Length: 246
Image (cartoon, rainbow, N blue to C red; front, side, top):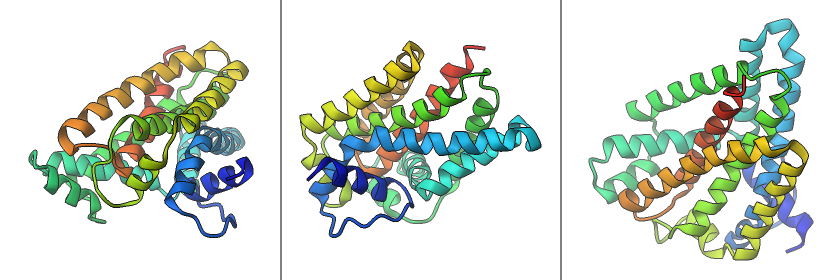
């Protein structure tokens, strides 16, 4: 797969932006994972534009709501759904691995997932609204890239929790070269944004390690929902570190 096709597949998979790439196989998605941090940075750039355009007429809080809404719209709420599903499974699975996996496949959102989703969105909006001046670009572009890099690492480091499904296809097809490219692209962003990006990314990594432990001990491995939760919670952790710079 060419680098351009891998990027297009990544855009088509991770966003609602329509792209024509023909038939996409699980192996294609595994290769496209290497481009996820770059796609995340681009999503963050669009959200940054929304934030800056709406801040003057709406104020910082409502502008942050607009930016977070833009992120959800661009991704189709894919990662937010994973966050809600994971908390539903952890809260309602009662420690039963099979039951938790079944809950994660249920399209309905339960009480645990709804509460987690509401609290998460409130925290993300407030963290974004209170970013120090000049850190909006780093906060939005950097957090979106870091969260997606953590998802790639989880897919590489953990076995798939299921014997079927899209997550298994991506995890089994992921290679060290893909991981190296994803990590290298994030380091390139660090060159552009400065060392604070790497410091904030450590918070995202801590979240990813915690989720890796939960996924391995409770679910037996990684799923797409775990990756979605890693992206969203990793973004929030990144923003909180940036917020702490005030």
